[in-house]
Image (cartoon, rainbow, N blue to C red; front, side, top):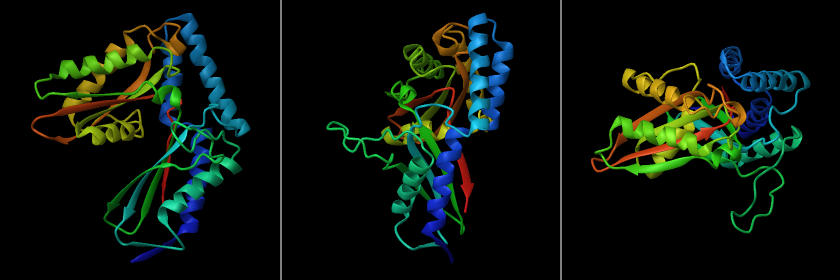
Length: 280
């Protein structure tokens, strides 16, 4: 049994919130830079170059890469041989988010009630997904999620008779409906299988996978390629001004499901699909 103080969790989450909002994953930055070189639309190319300059400025000036610093989504894998001391694990996560957003001067966008509103003032509570795993470590991933893209996400409960082409069509339709709203070029996380809430979580987790990393199953890797090609053929382009770069990548995560169902969720991410992780 290994003891981990909540103070370590708080500090880890605090720093992850700040770092994730300032610097994009390197492979995503590389993909945007490559898209700027490949884009055939003059307007689209100029926009992608501006996005590259924005990323560089955020890194150099230590400021957020986007004004919407998102709702904090935290994925936690807690080793079953860990004993957390000094307080509640969930309270520690939220205290880390509070410190990260307040001390990091990040915009606080969370309201206390979904209908009656009222800003909480510190971007808490976080959306926390916790999984118990073997070992004596805690792995944390913070994924700040802006809602220009989140609002364009969709879920559909297909029947088992749906084909792969039907699923591709749903993903492409989602991107088409989204249009310029999610600040394209977008990232698309696709969850297939499980049940209603599981496929939505899979789609969110898919956005935390490196854009350069394909699905391990060649069948689903092929679906990712087909979806990306068809989305980029929509001519929505960077920021909706047209071009061949509507999406930077499509990541699929799949899970077993019931014989009577085939749920599919698409979590839309903007060009600053942020996430950063560490292990304590």
